[in-house]
Length: 378
Image (cartoon, rainbow, N blue to C red; front, side, top):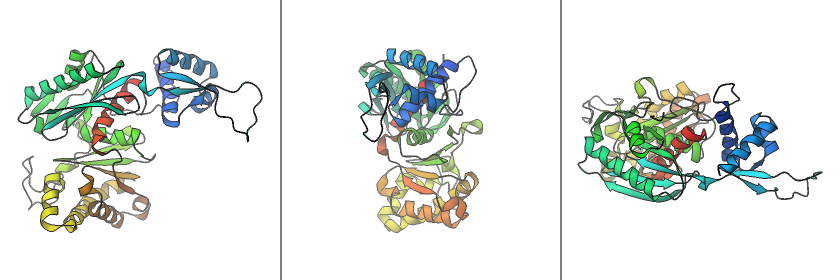
């Protein structure tokens, strides 16, 4: 059975439900609380989730038996607080309860994979040279890399997460990925059938946005992550939901035309944002014209993004890619241009920063895909 991506549904459980899957949902409520806020007593969990103490006790006991949670003993004594009776026992999330296999297919000429724990910590990694491999050959490399990583895991594997370039639907089908020579490739289904594990697949920019949402320092407002590599794409999270869009193409800003008289793009059109902001072009500009050229590109990016920020009232704009190119004149000019071209209510409190997760952002986001899909945690 193909595993659905968490794209297009709330990433975090918000309230109690009265449905056939209520038990799974209530487990997710408890797990999310412990994942986000750390150890708590059963009574504290009941208050935080609005579940009954009986329900919390039952589910916590079940998850302790499943080794997802563990009892940690009584909290440290606080002389300022006096308690009568037996102190509560804290329970906590167990990051080593299972491992996750993560794949990043977005790097040019390389596929990178890792085994992580449930906290997104990379435990081991592998990479495969993909030069010249497209179509079925590229798919075979993905299968081999995933199988090797599953074999490396020393704990039960919760699932496989994949961040890939291209347009990906909610079933984990890669509708179009020109750099890999893929069209309508049922990536999630083929990996699931080969490995017998849950598989979740999303576009690499969406995956990176989910990484910032789950493991980065993202706030509670709207988040847009712009991923800059050979190509350019964006992921958007609004109201705790990763946006997928009509025909699965939300965030495809790299092919917005900004200069009709500019350079021909790989997509066949002229003057796309990608022809200016892509890493190869940025490095050429930096070499020929110095840091001032990066500032000019930042102004172009800010002009493109200002209507998005104004329309969605985003709280954070995260730039993901080589920090030597993005963090400095380009980021500063992007922020200044957006603020200049939007109302104060939209632009003044906008946070424009680079990713806190570095080169592993897609790998870590792939782990977050599995956590959201299997445990309801993000």
